[in-house]
Amino acid sequence: MTATMTDTPPPAAPKADAQDSGSGRSVGRILTIIAAALVLVAVVRIITGANQLTSDGQVSAALGLAVPIGLAGLAGLWSERSGVVNIGLEGMMILGTFGAGWIGWQSNPWLGLLCGIGFGVLGGLVHAVATITFGVDHIVSGVAVNLLALGITQYLAKIFFSEGKPAEAGGNPKQSPPVDSLPDISVPGLSSGLQSVENHHWFLVSDIAGILGGLVTNLSVVTLFAVLLFVGSWWLLWRTSFGLRLRSCGENPIAAESLGVNVYKYKYAAVAVSGGLAGLGGAFLALVTSHTYLEGQTGGRGYIGLAAMIFGNWRPGGLAMGAGLFGYSDALQLRNGGETVHALLLLLVVLLAGLAGWKLYRKAHWQGGTCLIVAALVLAWYLFTDEVPSDFVGATPYVVTLLVLSLSAQRLRMPKADGMRYRKGQGK
Image (cartoon, rainbow, N blue to C red):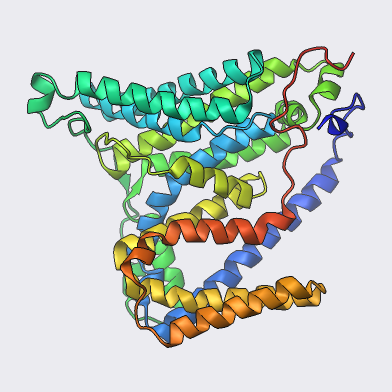
């Protein structure tokens, strides 16, 4: 623990050309992965006849489910890049759902959106005071925030949504009255044209049309805002001096302090932003997904967001891919049931076989052999069944979460000082 926290100054910032070339390679790698995944899914669709795999409805639903997970993961990224582990994301999302549902019903959804962000910021500040100022263990504080948020929202819901006029308007102790909808955006003409191409079920062409159609049809303004937040977070954290200082607090706070960085200030700012992003994810659930606050609405998305952040190696691009994967698997089981999820078994066989080949090539014989055995078992499951049992279908997003984390664990590199207790002047 203490070996990583020395008084050695952090390495100098990379030169601009080195950063640009590294970013170019990273973008190229991501685009290659996306293209390979698209071709693979198109092949599976042709073989299995599961045309819903790349339909515009499937993509639109996946995007709606991926946004709150992605915002939760982005919240965790901000916090952990400053060195503060934020297990309390689930609680901050719960606060966001309640704030958005409560104020959105009393006034309008735009104020509800702002209130959801504000409630999340409050949760983040509670976590920041406990961990940064008082040095409470980050995991203990995060669990406490989750429990506190759940209890507070349940208590307030009984007061505001179940007495007098609110109950007559459709509220009850577990649900707020309905909230007005936020506007959606569609591209006129393009949506119908893409749907026409999709309906021909051509290899790859129809798949691309279905995906693009899902991205330009009934798109919430909050979704567009979330995309801008991902791009803005990447630019701010990796292309500005503010981001360099914030990330240095998560790598070596003692060295950062020796260079004049106010570590407490940057940690507080990062955790507050983290709470606001998690609150925005909760507000999305209350205002866009269901148009009302519901008890238990987050459904563990804060924890899945953390998994997406880890899968993305604490970077926005990988995080977005992880959130999209989890949202896609969730939408698949909600919209299509066991038959379409059954088609994914074939996709899983191909991925496991490819991973086995890579491990064997790297001379990791034990891991490669294990992947081959699992691939053979999954292939047998696919060949000798016609549908996945309903109980397993409901667990698809969580199974995907476990598989992704287990397969990506060996390439992860978390911030060196993540989760460590820091005190001002401790390096002197």
